[in-house]
Amino acid sequence: MNIAFYPGSFDPITLGHLNIIRRSSRLFDKLHVCVMVNSAKQPLFTAEERVELIERTVKHLGNVFVDTSNELVVKHAKALGASVIIKGLRAVSDFDKEFQMALANKIIAPQIETLFMTSSSKYTYLSSTVVKEMARYGTDLSEFVPHQIIDDIMRKMHNGEKRVSQ
Ligand code: ADP
Image: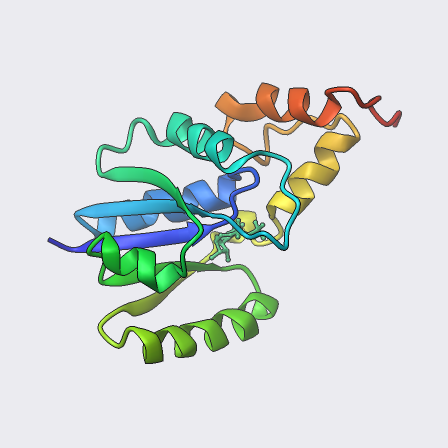
């Protein structure tokens, strides 16, 4: 069985992430999407909330599974039996960091390949940071994130905080 692993912060999942998930789920028997916990970042959503938001948007994809981990990416990928790590590439700026990481991972786990999937041209600009910035100003998020999670983002962003007037 060909199993792939797609790690990231997903804080929150965007249409760019979902595009990569949909396309990779067609290439592999199983795709594990994993919310990686990074203690250096202060996330908007907890890891468990991010898992739930992703699960809600990938329900229709029968071979996609979601979990969270604070382990090293390759270690967790290996534990799940994955032979491929998927990375989405938006621009040259993503490449430098991801290339370095892929080479380091190859030393730790030579049997695991990193597969770079180019972003759909519609979403090359899109990141979770852009989504949070838009949400802070109360902007319509329908072009940026799956419709099932828009209310959750708005609620979280404006909970106890006044919406910034436009
Ligand atoms: P970000 O916070 O910048 O959105 P993540 O850590 O959540 O980043 O991203 C997880 C993975 O998804 C990374 O491989 C990243 O390059 C990729 N990715 C993020 N946004 C997009 C997009 N718009 N198109 C394609 N890949 C993306």
